[in-house]
Length: 377
Ligand SMILES: Cc1cc2nc3c(=O)[nH]c(=O)nc-3n(C[C@H](O)[C@H](O)[C@H](O)COP(=O)(O)O)c2cc1C
Image 1: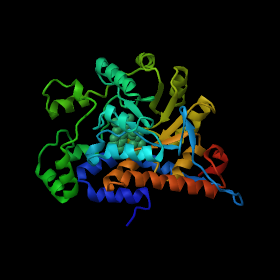
Image 2: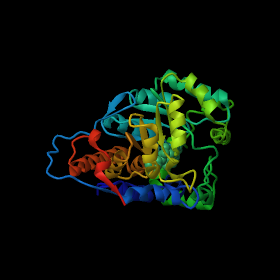
Image 3: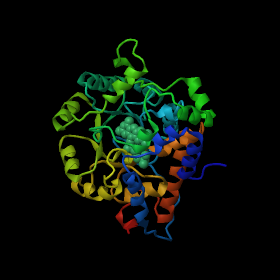
Image 4: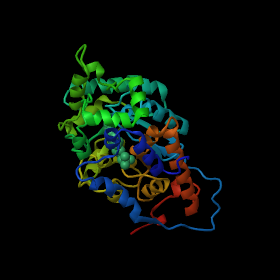
């Protein structure tokens, strides 16, 4: 049965993935109230459609950060993508290119930034974690520049690793620790297990270079653990701004004050994000803080939002409340876990739904979406 929604793809991913993999993808921090809050915020917003408007032809084309994309949605950075399914990162990047939307590659990705830059030269952005080693940070920035990335996204909401209870309970660790429950989990999900066996365990492809020669998976995992650190502050950001010559985006801003500081620091755009509820359980829903951030930075400053978007209607709601662009994390990976065309299917679903939503509202393009088309309950 073809998937009709992102929820269908999530159900399919849940069936196909070992429990510890699905939980890694699906879970959030603490009691997961923040995860739920992101989605609930969208449900509280209702549309105010206008009728008797000719809505043909329609386009979702959206200008953002120097070029026009086919739709106001992109693939948010997701670490360890190929753990979800071998080849998931390439499949998602390829689907983003085909759909003409941006794809953000994560620092702890399992495909190298050079490989993704070659695959998606005009669509891929690189997301940077500012880890403990400045030498590694500098080298990652230089590699991203050399590979031709146009946009560097610095994630600012991981001053310490998130405490995700599902992962803690599952004993989620790299390399995998053999156990009876892991063996059972793998045996119950043979398609994932065989595919992963065939392709080999996922590797931190961007970080391998910095591991000591001959380092095993354990020391690479330790290296990865050092890629989150609490040392990033505004003065360190200034040095990154000086080193990176192209567009620089901050991801993980939730306060209007920080948004204004970022704008004044020469940051080109902000992604309003709470890391999909994976860091701070009590973080506000991104949609709830969006209007005050928009008011603080003014109408023309580029703002994107992620967190909790599960449909094309959600994308249009985010635009109506002040976003210029949106990103989705889990939805495309639910897709990638569902089958070879799953990432493309997820994008197609979001785009078809967003286009249909414009029609229902009496609109032919995204530029006209504004607060008059929604009511917040
Ligand atoms: C499994 C997983 C891994 C993630 N890894 C990263 C990462 O490496 N870097 C980053 O900036 N954000 C990461 N994120 C956060 C996403 O970029 C994004 O902010 C979040 O998923 C948006 O929420 P959504 O999943 O509800 O769309 C990750 C999210 C998930 C689900």
